Structures are given as C-alpha cells and as structure tokens.
Amino acid sequence: MKTPYYYLVASLQILDFEKESALSYQEFLDLCREQLTNKDFEILSKATLQYDDPNPVNHVLDRWAKFNRRFRNELARIRAKNKGQDSSDYTRGDLYVDSFAIEVSHRALKADNPLEAEKILDRFRWKKLEELIRRDVFHVEVLIVYALQLQILERYKHIGSSKGKEKFEEYKQNKVLEMILK
Image (cartoon, rainbow, N blue to C red; front, top):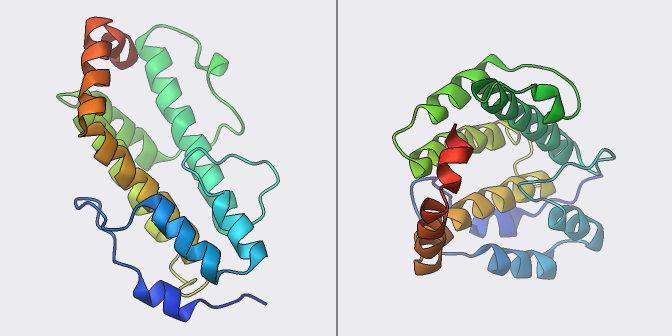
C-alpha cells in the first residue's frame, strides 16, 4: 500500500518551466527526508534526469527511463545522420521511435542558438513528466516528478549564472558548440 503525503504535496510550490523555483533541489530533498518513509526517500533519491536503471524500483521511474532513453536515441540518430555516421554506435536499448520526439528533435536542431535548442528539448521533457503523474496525486510518484522538474529548473539557474556564462564562452572558443550542433 502506498503512503500518501497530503501535507507535503499540498505545501509545495507549483512549478512552471518559465519561472525559477523558490525551493532548490537540495532543499526539496531535505524536506522530503524529514517526511517520507525510508523506502520512499530511497526511491526519490534515485530520480535524476539521467536515470536509466534496467531494474526500476518504481513505475514512474521506469516510464521516465524508457522515455528518456528513447528521446536520447532519437537525438543521437538525428545528430549521427547529420554527421554522416551510423547511429547504432550511439543508441541504446529498444529502437522504438516516437513521432513527437522526432518533431521536437528536428525543431531543436533548427533553433537559433544552443540555449533555445535546450529549452525546446526540456519543454518536451517537462510535458512528458507531467503526463507521468496524472493519477498519482499525493504519493511518492508526484514527488519524483517534482524532483525531476526541479532539476530541469536548476539547470537554467546555472546556465544564467556567471559560471555558466564562462563555460559557454569556453565552449565557443573551443568550437565545441559547432561540433555538437552539426
């Protein structure tokens, strides 16, 4: 039986992709550590944007891993094709193709700049995350999605920081961006 977290879920700020969160990912984890069962906190702490465990411990994490793997595969196929390379060297897992992922990937590759391309990709990830929790309103699954969304928002906080700008300039000077986008 799932443990409901009515108070915790109800007390969380509603996240918006276009707005910075008042709560950091680490603060969120600290809050959850105090209120979740040990088992649920262990599951939550595994929720990362790169999560790809072949033996998932939760149905939301399993669905996230499958989506994320397929989406990264689609991006790899398009990038490999653009470079005239065989995509099988860069893809993993099943070869399922999502028509929405194809469309989003092509739109991102046509973006005016790398930041806009990342936002296109992350908006798609955000939408998929929201689809994962339609029925799990007060359980650990909604907290997993919240954690993943916070991680997306924190990426943009770092991108806009002085350290992020320095890294971008370093990439530009080393022509890394040209290699990534071609």
